[in-house]
Image 1 (cartoon, rainbow, N blue to C red):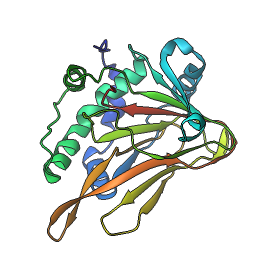
Image 2 (image 1 turned 135 degrees about the vertical axis):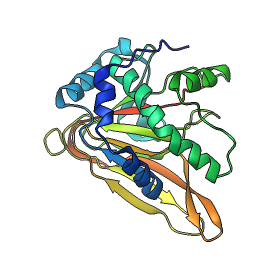
Image 3 (image 1 turned 90 degrees about the vertical axis):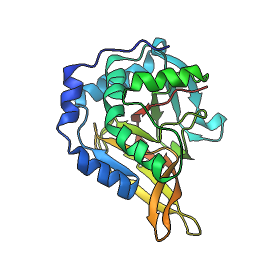
Image 4 (image 1 turned 180 degrees about the horizontal axis):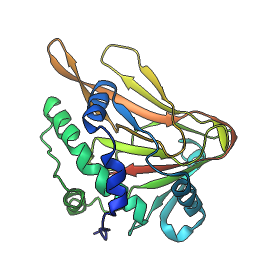
Length: 243
């Protein structure tokens, strides 16, 4: 079981400034929404520097060894760094209304509890006990193939990626990309422009779309286009734990 960190007033204050009704509408309409300047440049630099500290992480993945693309990432170990734990704890309850509404529309029985700690207890009870927040690192020529972060049967349907590097200063290229596959239609590509400290909330796997005969499911994947120059770091916040 993870050591639940106390939520700092600063983290909660940062999230209060956003128009969450508008964000929910954007997520419902597009499958994603951006929180601009969620983290300060100093917070981004501090998080990026953690990549070199092996004691913070439980495992490292080199993408090229598994056909995932090029670049690498590391999964944090418990207890999570304070800002990572606080973001996970404070973002989750703001996304639960969307998650439960989506499951209702898609005919999925699972309903998510209001508090993240209760959801993590459920994940751990069914054997998903490994933390999933991660840091990703890309260099020149690196990219991340389109994929979904599922990790087990218990899946929270939204996740968050926060860009820690500054485009056109630290790196060029490396755009965050989403694709959406609707039944009997070709995939819809989306490039989400991000600046340093911006967070994108997006669908992990599926989302409902209203049709003439009720809602139907669309399938989403995400990735990162090729980095042309420099280095790019990203923080990933996934709300379910892994088997």
